[in-house]
Length: 207
Image (cartoon, rainbow, N blue to C red):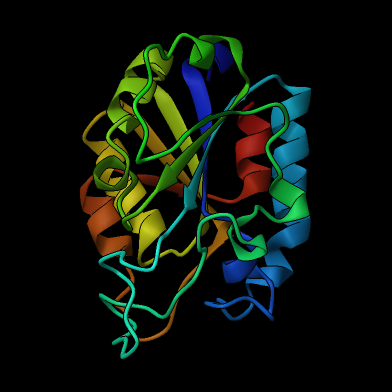
């Protein structure tokens, strides 16, 4: 695996999902924090580019509801400019270039210069939730994308499916993801799409 054709894809490792006091806490997610720290440190050490996605909602967002079904709609979480929308310390992107879903940009050249890119989104699917995602991915033009974060059966799944249509190889770090209850797990579908799953230790040995 060549580092210049490889990127890491950090899905929504935000306070509201990971921390027990978060607004949409994913049970057990905080136990992955040491591993996420390892992954973040490894990417820095190996100079691997990281795309960091983040939920960034306003009250009128389609996925928010006062009577959520916890499948298609959820209570308020990762509200714009609140502490819950911040990344946890373990995955905090250093010197990142940031792209909001509700802003236009004259250039995306900064993506080439930065090791960390932040893509804020207003939908489960980062490709639907931010109109700039495809442009950013085209500029980075990776052959292999390594995915980790939360949640396995919502935003991670949408990222994996979207990436599998756009890049040659998608790898999910199986010990660095966590699911929400009551929503089917996507592993059979990932297998059908040719997505690979491995532990971080296995990935490390290949890099």
